[in-house]
Structures are given as structure tokens and as C-alpha cells.
Amino acid sequence: MLLEKGREVLHIARELEIRAVKLQQGWENSLRLAVDSTFPVALLSPPIAAFYQQQPLTRLHFTLNPSLLDWRPLTDGQADLLLGALGEPPPLSGYDYLPLGELELLLVVAPQHPLARHRAPLSWRTLRRYRAVATGEGGALLSDQETLTVCDAAGQLALLRLGWAGGACRAIRCRVCWTAASWSA
Image (cartoon, rainbow, N blue to C red; front, side, top):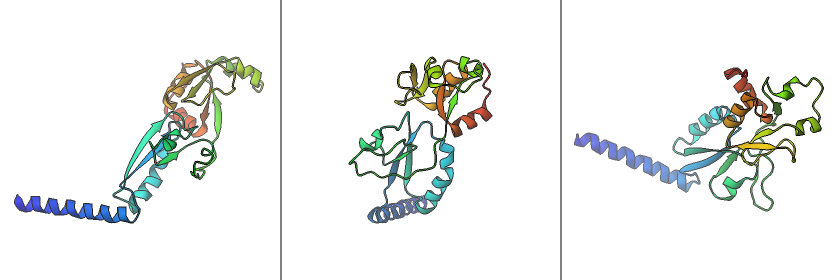
């Protein structure tokens, strides 16, 4: 038993030594990543696996944020990296960004919602008459539209399914939900 405990202590000491070397080389012990709640987290699986191949000792901590429109988790020091942030970083912040791809937004309504019965293309005037549901500090499709703001994309999709409102959703998130659940009332 003493021999077994000794091996365990040696193993822990080696791990600490490796961590110290990595830290000296500029690698962090942990990275805090803020992810927009509408971002399809499943798409991160390949990059996470590749990261852990190179840096198996760095811990990744993901937090879901209702909306990354304002880059607040990064500017407030709550995150080291943002994923799914919309727009450019705050001016003079020193932050940079790389696009992950193009964001395709879809107007989504349930089959029982009044907008689903419109045959002609929808005008802004028509959209304005109906409530929108949005996540976080995002907002209405139109600035003067009545909006119900919810804490995350799951809540938004739940209310959309019920037909309470229409909303703009990331296309990839909608496609995942359409295959996973029925949109009927």
C-alpha cells in the first residue's frame, strides 16, 4: 500500500512539473470560453478534440451566454475567448476576431401562428404587427416591434413552437430542432 501511494505521489509530481513547463512556455492551465446560447455547441467537438491532442493538460470551461452582442464577458474579464459573438469587438479594446462562418438567420413561426398563413412575401409593416421572441439583449426583428426577451435559445424555440411569437433564429439551430421535435401544437 505504501508503494502504491508513493507511485501516486510521483505521478502527481510529474503532472505538476509538466504543467509548470507548459505555463512557462505560455500555455494557460485553463481557458474560459463564453459561448452564445444560440451557437450550436456540437460543432465544437472536432476543434476541442484537436486542442486536447496538443494541450491535454489545459482545462476548458464553457459558459453559455444569452447574447454575445456586446462582448461583455470578454471585456469584464469573465472569459478568455468568445464563440459566436455577433459584430466586431468594441473600438480601442485591443481585441481581434476571426469569423467562424456566415450566420444565416431564418424567420421562424409555428404552423398555428398567424404569420404562417400569409401567402405573399412578408413586409416589415406586416411583421411589426406581431410580437417577436428574442434571446438575451438581442432584440426584435424591428426596433419598434413588441418583443418578449428570454434567457436562451431553448426558451426562444419553446415559445416559437407554442406560436406565441415569431423570431429570428440561426438556421443551423432551427434545422437541428426541426429534426429533433415536432412543430405541431
